[in-house]
Length: 148
Image (cartoon, rainbow, N blue to C red):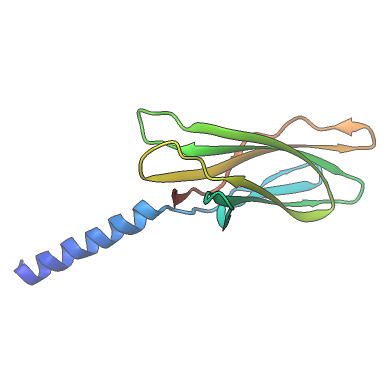
């Protein structure tokens, strides 16, 4: 192998590592039950507030058949590498009818040196005509990394 090929491989590996450090959005997994579907989307940067803190938008798309109400519990998390566990940074609950995209604007946590790797998890239950389904399992969004 020539020096040129070795240099090219090192440069390519460095570029892949740099892209990986920024964060992997990943595909969100939808949760569906009793005539409603909800999808936790990867958190995105929205704006910087007057205190200079970044504000993220934790979006959830929801679509329910007529006459159904989805109750969604959202947990917002900061991901950590093993052996440290992920950190729960907040919980919210929403009631939704019809089709919409929920926007939950929250400030970026400052829990460690370097980037914060943020994601959300949701679960849902559906009510219709006085009957409520059991809670679904948790579905996780993609992870996105942000600098403080």
